[in-house]
Length: 109
Image 1 (tube, rainbow, N blue to C red):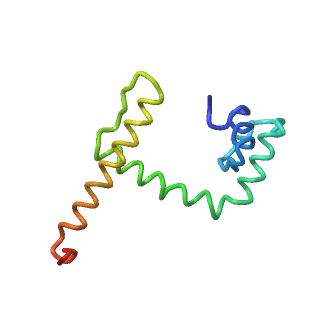
Image 2 (image 1 turned 45 degrees about the horizontal axis):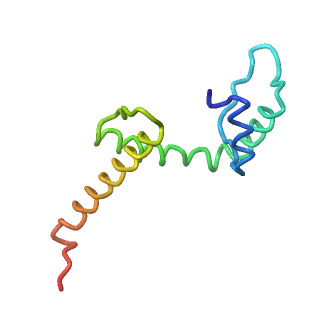
Image 3 (image 1 turned 180 degrees about the vertical axis):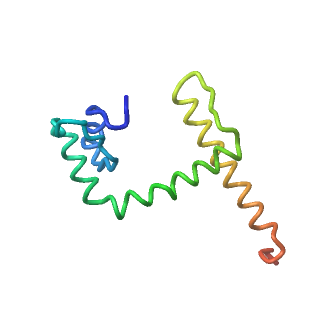
């Protein structure tokens, strides 16, 4: 399923999400699908505010991927999802250890 397919757009609207992504306009025609027209209107409305924050989120996930191997090999989607969660928790743990191992942030009891 591609990121701008009608099924994904319908699924996001059913779950109460706003799909904010750029719609590829056909070369010689206008956009015919009503779902894609709606997404284009939403994108044009929010492209300067919300869409640009996407890079901050992608940067976090890019850091996690680079620190703990880029690929997840799993048999099922559930196992892959759990592996990603575990890698993310391990990344947060490493950051936590680095933050509290700094001499300025020691806890004195």
